[in-house]
Image (tube, rainbow, N blue to C red):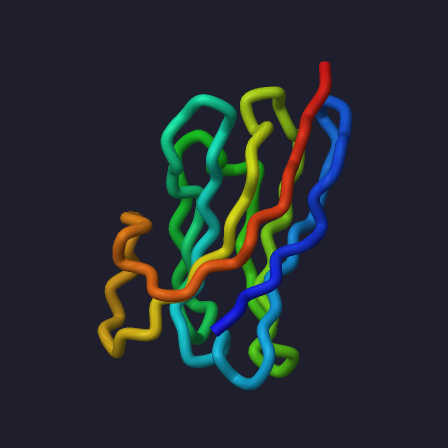
Length: 125
């Protein structure tokens, strides 16, 4: 299964970006979906996760109130709206899918089976 992340780029502090994650078929609609990021020289970290229906969402404290995860199962796509971007948000962002049947939303990347290739977000000051 191949997830395709897009939408990254170079922006200035305080600006916005919207990342997208798409896949062929109905893979995304069957999965709990999450975004993770890896900043230069740092470990991968959890950003946000959304339930299959979109009714439940969780965020890392560092992005709460600024980022919003959403999904459109009709077009098999997940989004990450990023507002008020800060230099510490600079990272490669990855989307990930958890196809297991439980409703639990994992924040540990090791629990995700499907990954996108990553899209680079650079926030300049």
